[in-house]
Image 1 (cartoon, each protein chain N blue to C red):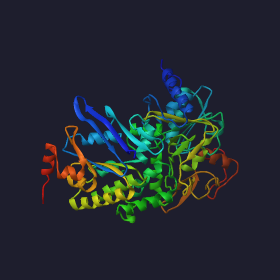
Image 2: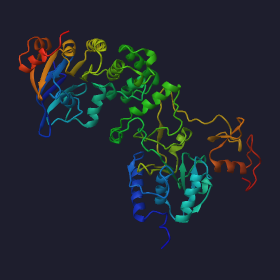
Image 3: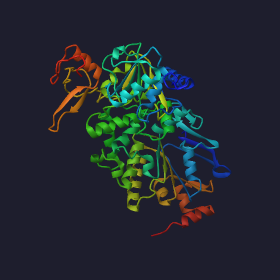
Image 4: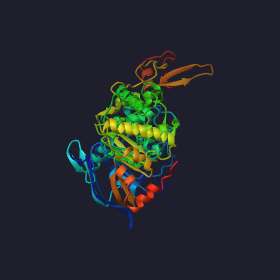
Length: 289
Length: 256
């Protein structure tokens, strides 16, 4: 007996996690406590997301992992290898081919469909945490729908910076009820949260799972005179020329040289394969990247 | 006239030890009630029970609500009671840092209660915050400073502004001038007296400082060992104390 159980976790644990997921789907935005297990990776590396993925995976699934939009960073590569080894599932870098996508801090540019699941890695699930340190108090605030404090944070932003400076983990209200932290995705991605795919959020260290069913009404909090604005770098992608994608700024030399590239590597690659070339890009060659 | 607050037979025990017992009084709109007594006499326990911070073992606290008339706040549902706490009630703590959010600017501190009752217009919230800072004599250019940068007296005034911004009808104060030097105390008392008169507030002030009640309170209750030993008009109690303990209390005040 040297094999792993399918997807690493034992069946009882997966059952427990699935129950938490179902409860989360039934109460969109509500943080469901679950008995988070130790995983063979440190907290902060996606232990919550990995457990949710493990509970959702079936042998027929095609799995994709992105970290800040990229398929090829350490976190993404190691989690993809983990499930290749423990679940022998097919993996892909193509958003459209994946049936289950685990993500850290981004939503893919390509719109997801109803037969896909998006799993988020969440560091701190409690949106009120840095305003109210007591967990007892924040739970009471959620249960009584006392969310005035969330606006105090946005007020502070405007009074200090002249505009709402929160750029990621931007708080949202789900179906007019729970205020939720959408994990540290850029606020550029917030309008996509009402998507067709199921969205599951796993926080391993904090032992919470929450979820958004397809087509959930998700509203980003704001003030009447300072409305919510999704923001991105005012630039086009230098590799593929896309003007509608979220961009990373990359420093390329010691003389202040920089380029802006799509943070979603699969989106950028597919656009370049289709013949789009950005300001600093070279024509796409298969396998050249 | 309906009393704003009717307190009937409040008792609170900590195990076998008595916190307070058999406290009953009526508070009418616009009236300021002082509660004095030595340390451990149960006055803070009583205030916590009245303000809903601590569940009493017996008794009723009936508040004349705007919507439904007199209701027992102890049997109200929790959302209703908490709504009351941030609209019609206010609580001024002895230590300003218990009542303020120290990591949030002065404007945010004042605006919090407005946002908690649904204000969602930044400009309006800020205008009201600046207006209230002015009323408690804090300069408008301090609106974005955090309370850490304020002196003790300013912090206490900020706490008062934060509490009064939603126009409450009943204010609970726990030693509002404790820990402040005498000249700052005098200014704060002056300010409080002005606000109470101007807004027609009712207030319950717990203190061990007889000068504070002499200035602010219409009526006085003297507590000892968890029970009320004497009550009446402030001047009457202080000038002609009947109970032995009150006589001791009044004669203990240092004359300069």
